[in-house]
Image 1 (cartoon, rainbow, N blue to C red):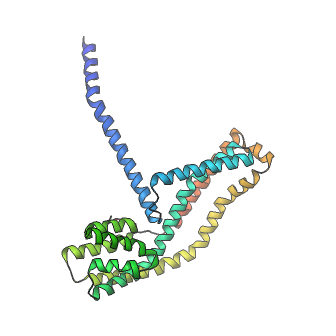
Image 2 (cartoon, one colour):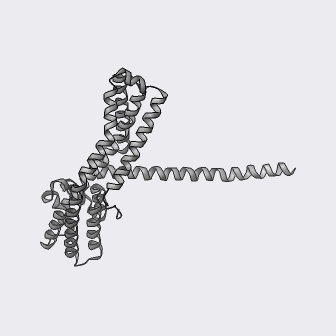
Image 3 (cartoon, rainbow, N blue to C red):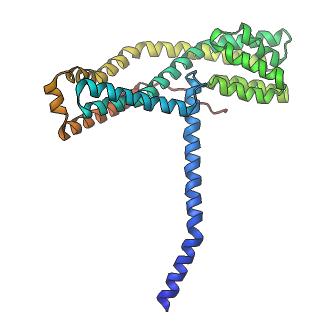
Length: 288
């Protein structure tokens, strides 16, 4: 009788707590998915390809990996070698996207001082903040005209300055842009006469930061490029060896798969370590 009561109590607790745990796990999974989705959206916006949906980007990675697998398998006749290069092809778009995001961030870092000077001049001339931002769509730097032009069009339609600023931040996807937008929002909401001084200080700081960063990057560029060449050299050699049947036969086995897997893991760890050691501090988007 005691065993029966214990089993009944355990089954009751399982029926009561089980759905809650399942719902909690599903909620955590949904939050994790939404967080990864937001990170990918931010990376695409930072790379200047925000018009591409995350699903389209992932589908493109899969299609590219399949195409590389088919091409390498048909040329070399080895499924092992084709699988290795297909894995590289699947993750290559992510590396290209991050590289493009860094290049765009460096380009914007050089352009923001001119944008801020234009805003200061427009405010001095008596333009309102929406008008000062809108005129950047026609007179600002070419690389930044499109986001400010979309801001001007949206503001003319809705007249909601705060919402338009939020969309402008998402469109720019840049830490400096976040700071400038939030400074303008604060000035618009609470007023203040120090906007010009704040923007001039920020412009001076950005110019000094860009000058210092440019000197550091020019000094370390040859080291980084040499390390990248050292990581890519073994796989370029493997691509050339895959045209020889005897080399393909050596790798097209379980032992060959183990060797290639260990080599790929070593190269990946070495590349990540090289990137981490050579990485300069980057501004983060904390004002989103």
